[in-house]
Amino acid sequence: MPGANEVQVCPTDMNPGTYLLVQGGVTAWVSAVPRDHVRPGTVRLAYQLRLLIASDGDADNTRVVLVAAAPDVVRHGVSIGRLQRSSEALDRTMERLWRALFRAPEFSARVVQAHAGDDAAPIVTLHPAVFDRIGIESGQQVLVRWGGREVVALAVADHDPPTSVSPTESMKKVQRVNRLWPDLPEGISAHVTVRMSTRLRDQLGAPVATVISVRRRMRPVLVRNLNSLVVPLASLVLAGAALPDPHWPTLGLGTALMSVFALARLRIPQPRSRARVDEDWVERMAEPVGHSGSEPERGGEKVGG
Image (cartoon, rainbow, N blue to C red; front, side, top):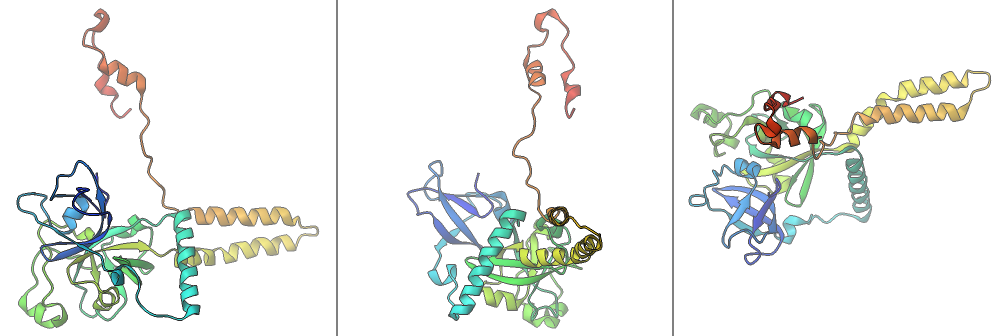
């Protein structure tokens, strides 16, 4: 099955790489993965991607276009100084390290119009149910990615999640910057939408109707939690220093353990790849009815046990 941001294509149709998928005016950056089982002239999309681009998956009625990514879109084309470039490279390296340790899953969402008054602010407005999924709280920073470009934004909870009902003409006139924005298609849940300001769209170079990826920014999360450890760790060190003969290795070990346990809650757990199977029960359920002349066991009562 294709991944969330993947499309499976016929190997003879195109090469693997990054492509801009266009369907009905909606765009999404995807990775093309050649697969032998895909028929020529067709693509296979994941369910999440079909939902976000409002495709019903009917091969006879749905047509998508894959456009090869231009280098200036995949890479940052802004000219910056050597010091700033080194600083950003270090920040990206540390971000990848913290991401590997604590996990920062991506969340793909369909862009809708920002609330009135938010268009000049570097914020994204998410459904309240999304925050636990990506491991942050409202008011913390996230990384918003579109293609190869990424910007930092402040994530806030949406006080009025979008619906598929079209706004009134009077509201379109009030929000003149959004009056040409396409309506949310029927059937798209509010939790897979994100309100993004025009300022962020301009920085990303993203069109109006598109799909973006959001994930938490690790450095502010770590700094915030390390700040909460200052008082208890300082208290432990001062208490140890007040002893007549402090055992500093023990105090150091205690300080390290407190830090590890305090930061461990930041790690988003990885679900198990497979569940434990009761092999004996499976074998009993596979036996023919009336096997060995005995009455069949009511094995179905053991489901979930």
